[in-house]
View (cartoon, rainbow, N blue to C red):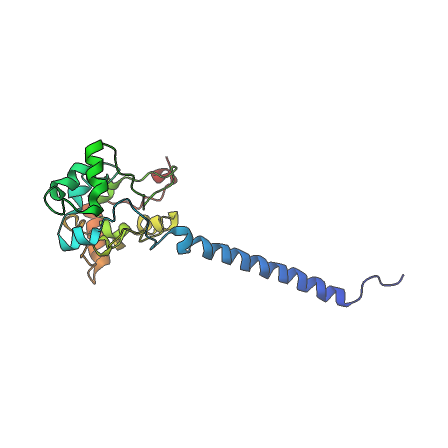
Length: 216
């Protein structure tokens, strides 16, 4: 019986198989790169806000503590958005007639809250509690970045599960003294792992990686 396929067909078939596998690997790599890109994660991307609130000005220049505005960060799951009255404690006297702050004054007059564009927003299937992280010695800047250097707030880190697990698997790398949690200028010492292990023991920190910790 005559040969149906030319001997070169074997080479073509092998090239097709290997080429398909390479193409699939490249496609997966591209998808992974896009999924971690700033375009998707929104890392470093500023959002238009009703009022151009500058954390840099209020924190670094004026020395306002995080807890003055985010009053529930030590006691509840949410850091909280400050009420307009908190803003007006200062701005009824400072820049009281500034056109930029008209939305703030209008909110006070009408009682209608300002609709801020949320920067850090976890999916609904993720449970996160600010208060427990504060009590365990995780600093604001660990997750939110150097807020005191942000004229307009942006996301400093990807909020993916793998990023959270970096800390949950090795908390000694990130924990700091509780007194330094709200200190934006705190830097890990050269013996961070030694300090971290001591603090993890003192604060009763466990390596919590069970799914139910965050997915409830």
